[in-house]
Length: 256
Image (cartoon, rainbow, N blue to C red; front, side):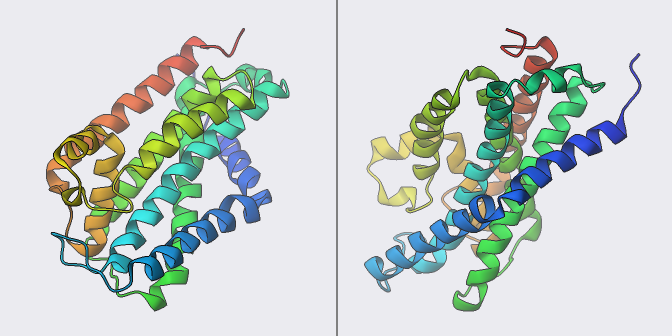
């Protein structure tokens, strides 16, 4: 049985952390600024309107949704960009040869993705807290949904990076899969505002439960029961991590 290599795992984790911190203006402050621009635009476009069915003003409703969207997109970007850059530059071979098991590699990549997502959300919320009436009502729910979403999106980014042969492949997944699903996950609206057919579409979107549960942690309201959705979220985390582990273990598209 192969011994555990905590130092190697920690080193890979630190490499991933330093990689996105080296370009922090692009990886941390730009996503936070983009989310704040969305907030300002919708704040003045919607005025003092309340969200139908939830009895909360639109500005307060948007904040946790935008924070979650930024977390999901950055967790995906962290692992997918690292993997595809390694493949394009031919550096991935050193990772394959490193004395690290598939569990250790996947753990290091996903942990770094979670850290980046939490840092982006913290910066975004820290800037907005003085200007918005919002509290950490259910901190456990916030952490559960925030970390789970980061693991799922980091895992999907890892799989996309392993599958892709170039940057164009990753951009295709980002623009045609991740971006539409995050935008249509209830970040900007409540599903109660939608026609029946679009409500069903949202309920079929797994990202919707992540956004709705995360928002419940701040506001105490949501379109669904976040406690009933925990099984869906935990199940998605387990499936994603197992897929990452198996694909890395088998060397899927990494040894070609």
